[in-house]
Image (cartoon, rainbow, N blue to C red; front, side, top):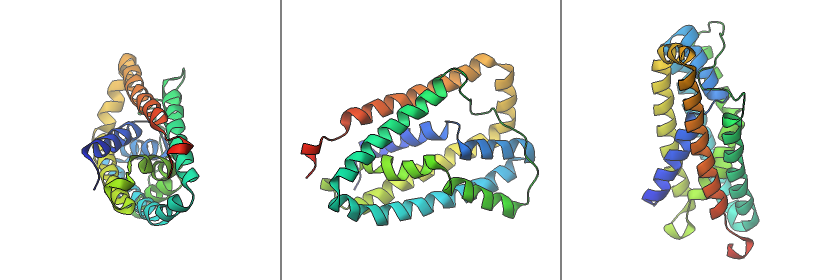
Length: 215
């Protein structure tokens, strides 16, 4: 059973990731602006299925590997912290992209939108690292089955990701127009999400286990 601290931590991590520009978000927002909220929600359904696929593969395949190769667990924890710090820098650095700096796309059928959302998620390195490097950081072997904890944490991540993306899809058009007219708000959005990811990355780097602490 996961702890409240682990649940809240993964929720905060996913919140930061969901609000950070990436292949999934840029695609979903662009579709919503160019083709309407129904197109965005259809693409989001494909994205959600991609999350489930990653969650199942990661939890069923990595639990046994961590027991056999404990050094891999350490490497993944360090990689997860480094990725969050890199993502924070990408957002905060001069010229970093904001969430609603999108491009127009050609209109697609709903079937193609679903498939594109699925493939965009499956091919997104941010999602792969999330399940392979970040979620394992919040599991505790002493708290029970690592696989069960992985599914619980993955479920929280999916719920938060879908909720945030869904809200952004519905508000994409009006928010994009507002932010384009208010450069100060655009900069504020970048600094908040970048700072959040950087703070979590630093904490994970500090909490990463040493080789002597691995059983």
